[in-house]
Length: 143
Image (cartoon, rainbow, N blue to C red; front, side, top):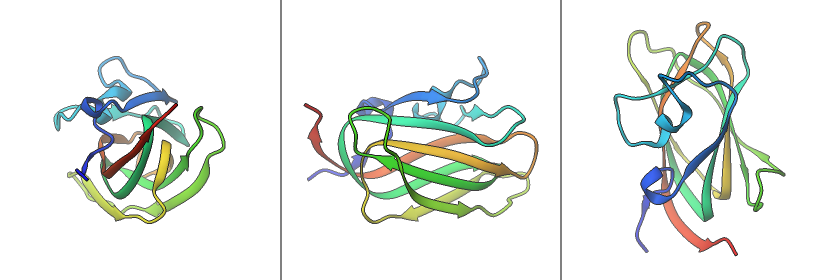
């Protein structure tokens, strides 16, 4: 089986919800594959976004590139709608002054159709997410 970046928009992934949106930095930037683009939060926390895969996937590794994110919670759902999320990962990220945070998480029990990323707190009033990639395989299409 071929391992791909399941979060890539070219693989059919889609950001279906984001709690903040700046027209210069829309949530779609998280999965567009362009390292120059990003999504930015507004000044309140928590902030969240949901990625929909349009298929059942099994994730083996997540790579998150962000800036000024302090605490990140990731929840997953295997439903056909973005409901019934269960907490999966919660992580405090290291503060990296002037450079991107590059967090690599090897995961277990990574079956999902949706992932919800919740930024619980940040090191400043604003935070940004530059990219999310999920290494893994598509298990099946949704019926």
